[in-house]
Amino acid sequence: MVLVGAQAVYFHTGDADLATAPTTTDADVALAPDRLADEPLLEEALRRAGFVREADPGTWRGQGAVAIDLMVPEALSGPGSRGARLPVHGRWVARRARGFEPALIDNETHEIQSFEPDDDRRAHLRVAGPAALLVAKVVKIEERRATPRRLKPKDGLDVLRLLRVVDMGEVAQRLQLLAADEMAGEVTRSALASLREHGTESDGPIAALAASAVTGTEDPDITIESTVLLVEELLQACDERR
Image 1: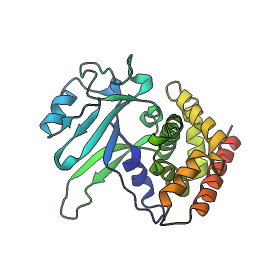
Image 2: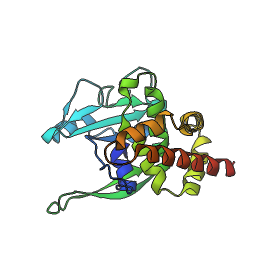
Image 3: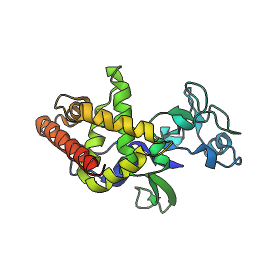
């Protein structure tokens, strides 16, 4: 199990010196099918923990409307269009999602703790690294460009958050390794191509979404300029490591 999505982004970035506060309504977890034990069954474990499956495969809602999305990288999801076909666990417990292939490679184990000072619970969980998260965010934005109403400004801002705090050289090196990987290579190369085509444009989707997310808290024009410059810096670092 690997923590992905916005919570993983915020784990690495905090507020990234942005006035717009980090926020998300659910937790996204990527599963490696070949490493799942047969017992306990995921569905039984989730129901024992108080989660109820929503209509969409992989979406579970628990106490206090806490939601969790269980996803399997598309390359490992088997046949189908929505649910991921998991041996033993079935095809409804998790859904297929393109873009999370790198997260099963680029991750490290961290201690996760509660935000509440009087809650001393601790858990160790793998968290996707910045390179994998950048790929997932860019792929998500690119896929939703055909349906503008599905685009979320927060996704563009999450790209900016990551670019503001990472070591460009380290991320570029990791992206090159992911691009050469048998499982994660295709989706990584696709994300890098999208960054080159749209990420360096001031009116491109990434910069525009990031600017839309900060409206009312920061100068959108500065946000656009910052996003474009940082994307260009990352791509240059990638080119230097070819």
